[in-house]
Image (cartoon, rainbow, N blue to C red; front, side, top):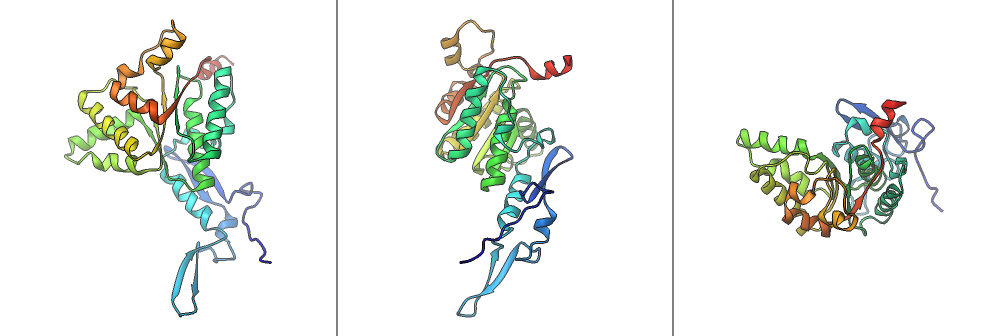
Length: 270
C-alpha cells in the first residue's frame, strides 16, 4: 500500500498557502512547507523515465496542485480589501434574504459546475461582493478553477483606454470571455454610452453562447423583482444595461435579492 504524502503545517493552517495584501490585490504565496517539499526538492515538478527511455516532466504529486492554484488565485484580480475572504462561509447573514443567498452560493461551490451562476441585487453594503469573492476564492484555491474578478466601472475605464490608444477591445475582453468563472462587480454602476453597452453585450453574449458561468453584483433590481415585491424605491437594472443583456442574464444566473441595512454605515456608528 502506497503511503499518502501530504503538505501543510500550522503556519498555513494545513492549506499550503498564505494570503496577503500586496498593493491593490490579494495575493497568495506558497508556505515554507511547500517550498521545502521533499518529493520535488522545492521545484514543483518531478522528472522520470519510462521503460522506453523517454524523459517526462510532471507536476509534483505532493505540492504541484497547491502551486497551480496559487497562480490561478493571483491571476483572478481579487481586491486587497477581500484578502481574508477565502470561502463563502465567511459571509454572515444579517437578514432572511441573506440566508438564501448564502445557501445558493454554498451550493454553487459544492456542486460546481452543475449550478448556474448568480446575480446578487440590492442596495449597497449588504455583502454582495463578499459572497461573490468567497465563491471564486474557494473554487480557485480548492478546485483549481480559472476565475476573474472585474469591477464594472474599471472595465469601462480599461475599454476607453484601449480605444483611445488604438488597441483592439479584444485585448481587454478576451481574458474575460475565456475565463471559466467571471465576476462582474457593480454592474450598471456607470451610465454607459451606446458603444460601451455594445461592448458589454459582446461580453455577455459570448459567455452566454459558450455556456460560461458568470457571477454578478449590482445595486439595481430587475423589473421582475419590482413586479413581484412592488413599491420599493429602486433603479431598474434593465434601464442601466438594456433589455437584451438583462434577458441573457436571466438565463445565465439565479437572480437573488438582498435586503437589510448597510453594514458600512452600521460599523461607523459603533
